[in-house]
Amino acid sequence: MDFRRERIVCVSDRHRIEASVALPSEGHASRLSDWLNQRDREFIPLEDAEVTSLDDPDDVEHHPFLLAARSHLRIVSPRQGN
Image (cartoon, rainbow, N blue to C red; front, top):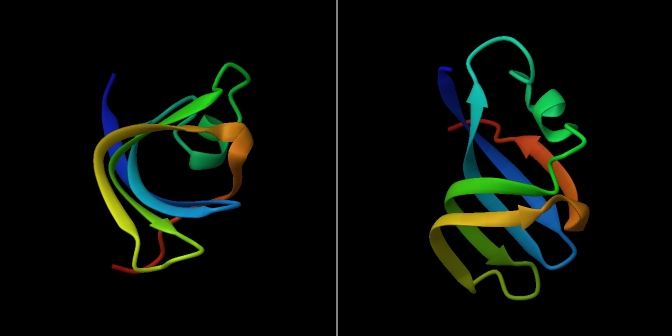
């Protein structure tokens, strides 16, 4: 299966995360909304993640890979612009 990378922004109660996800190039779950709504997806694998604290915007961490619990995310959106 071929994959494409898409930059997304996730917001939890305490953090903003900008990262890449690997989505199927076509077919089932090729749209971000379909991919996120798969019933068995409890964690979202994120690559090249930049995690910013909402309490302290100067507190930024970079992670090559992390898993975010879908149940803790309040907003997930494709990243707009460059």
